[in-house]
Image 1 (cartoon, rainbow, N blue to C red):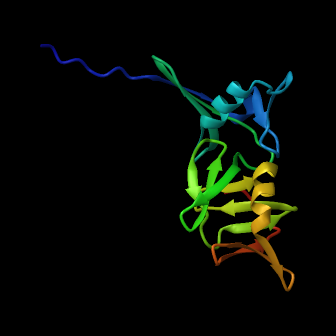
Image 2: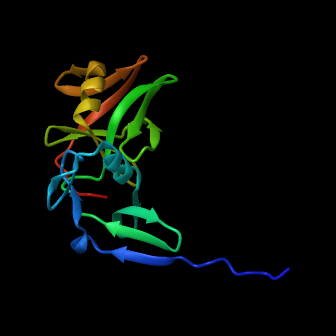
Image 3: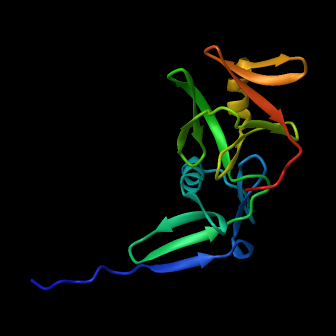
Length: 164
């Protein structure tokens, strides 16, 4: 039997400046014709969000090629879109379909929005997730925190809008 080399896929990279779509500050996708309307297309774009040393991109692989389209986004490319109980904490579902658990010291407020800071990403809470998590928000002496299963998660105030 003859040994064959695996096929190398052609890599297509579209720089951010040439992308024909973008994401607004609320996580809504747009192109020159307006905002994306079809739920399946929106889910596809969201699930294809990846990040490397050059920034966020939409990733797609077909038979012979791999495509990375770096796209502009107004605030951040990742959003918490839903929350659910997870053991003794809160599970977070992101727009790219990743799941994570809320960790200590990662929440902060900036420009009246709630964010989660991880080592690799700044993740914004969507309005839907914010409404759901708001029942856990407590205020004491002008400081906000989440109180979940007798555990307190402080919410820091920040004016740092720089992106990781």
